[in-house]
Image 1 (cartoon, rainbow, N blue to C red):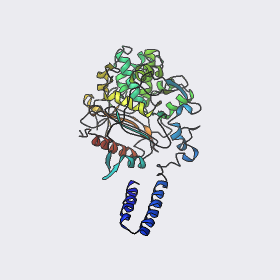
Image 2 (cartoon, rainbow, N blue to C red):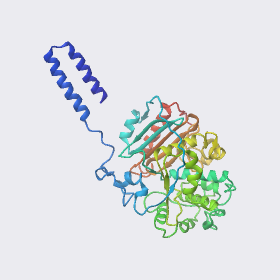
Image 3 (spheres, rainbow, N blue to C red):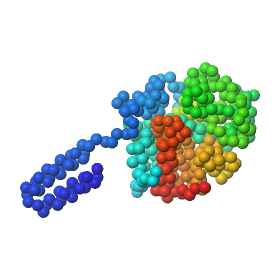
Image 4 (cartoon, rainbow, N blue to C red):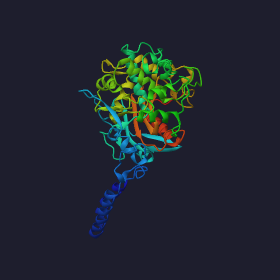
Length: 436
């Protein structure tokens, strides 16, 4: 648009050397050109009609339906039947000033170069926030979303749960990560998960068989149905998983059930809800801008594995806190040693390192570890949710999305391009991208 406008202005200036009739004609044509430029419609956002634009981006009643995803996944507390518990913010807000000099974000994908805006035009992104040393480099909202939206985490909640485990450990409410989960989660005592050390649950290495294919017939679907209906109870479903695929602590196998156990460890160890803990241990000391919320199951226990909801900027503040190893100003909000062990690929046992835990990522304490020489890690959730962090360079990227498929196993393209975009963000902002 800018290049067309500039050409029209240039033509207008050149007309000064022409006769009055030619000048008048050209000025008329120039005015028409500028009017056409200004009146041209905005580009359509990817799949906007399938995602419910003409319906006003509704949020229910089926909040997983394609046409409801944009609306519901940014306002799940307004969906009928969903139980939520507020996470109250404090009186002070951590400023996120805008960078004084705009940064040009570029990246390459499949041997072609693209810009940040082109990335947004190619993928179903509802919110994008990029920070450098606590300053906003870029902030975008799409599909009618705005700064007051509180975006659903899906499995980014797992990383929040890990942060709370670290805070409980710091306070002595959890004595040791080598304690069995059932020592704190009384409703799981005597079960396979109850006998599993907390550390092994943090690494998703209980060795217990749990299927997670996102096909509606797997174990995570069974767990989610019990969460939503209360029949059978979540605790009884968790107790039912007893088959073993490997020895405890030896192998990473992704299992949302293990995070749900950790949530019960937290509430059992503290006698408080996940929402209360998140408010007092994270949201208030971190300087959150808006209240957040957890979704609760019928037993009033928060969905530790998938259902935390927060604004884009507050997701960014969580990333900044992690980039600072849990410290804000002079206050150590979270234990630095725990966070290093949770997020540093170099500190993981060999089986949990990048290229070993998975073909690409390593896995720490509920954090995904990038295969970069410079410590870099991520909160990640299905359908494209992510917070990427590189502490040494102060770079944080938050993305909320409504990808069509839950995982890269089902549709690798959006996830591969997101990885390429993150590398481009690092390169554009002076980050470090050397791989293992």
